[in-house]
Length: 106
Image 1 (cartoon, rainbow, N blue to C red):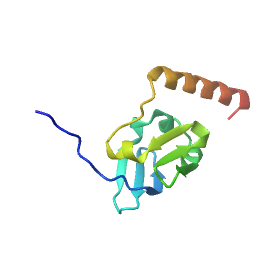
Image 2 (cartoon, rainbow, N blue to C red):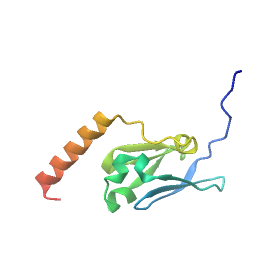
Image 3 (cartoon, rainbow, N blue to C red):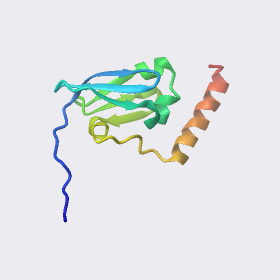
Image 4 (cartoon, rainbow, N blue to C red):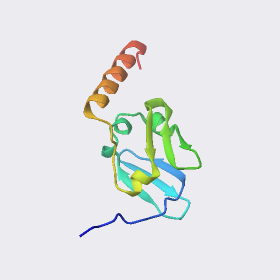
């Protein structure tokens, strides 16, 4: 038996909210999509200010956080996918972040 993936339309994001434990995205089609922040380790380790500093990529196909170098596509959220970053990559990022904070005193 062959099962094909369900087709769905990806509506562009228009509003993004990040709380202490949830990423909430409102696409143009009126839905509200939320995901636990634990799915995105960089967002978990970001400050409130860093989480608030986002911009839409393209016409709303994704979200970019400059301060933490994080990109999340709307399609991946709709498919229920978390971060695809490897644990090794995340650990390198976290180590560099910690070292930078120690150097700058922040």
